[in-house]
Image (cartoon, rainbow, N blue to C red; front, side, top):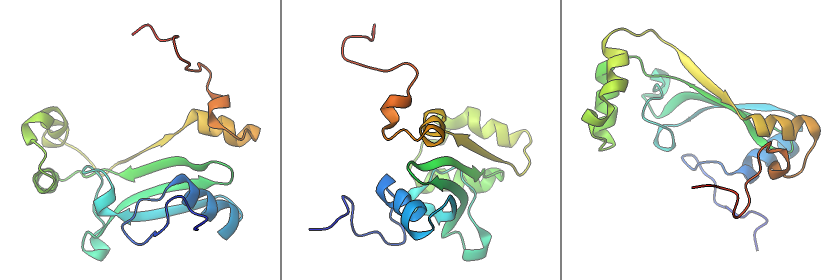
Amino acid sequence: PSKWQFPGVEFGTDLATEHERWLAETKFESAVFVYNYPKKIKAFYMRDNDEDGGETVNAMDLLVPGVGELVGGSQREERLDVLIEKMKELDLNVDDYWWYLDLRRFGSVPHAGYGLGFERLVTYVCGIENIRDAIAFPRYPGNAEF
């Protein structure tokens, strides 16, 4: 039996937490940036890398020991024509994204965005083993009023 819950990682496979943690804890024994992810596993709004003909996107993750992904980010596609073409390739209804396309249509510049998971940061800094113990407002059966 494999030690991996999700074996068979190759180019184009999305990394699971176990793979991210292995990279940070075993392979590099430190925090590590992984960048230039395969296009087919990332969101349509991420900008394709011109250097490899668009096989990858300009995206990155910061992986840390004990957690895996702590920060994720990418450059956004600022070219309206390219963005619409990518949406069509993925069978997305362009009309549903009118508001997003207007952001590009009425002016945009090359830019990027990222996100840091707050509970992941608390887990990492405090050395907590399970992220559920770092959530300020825990969920449990019967406490949601929905």
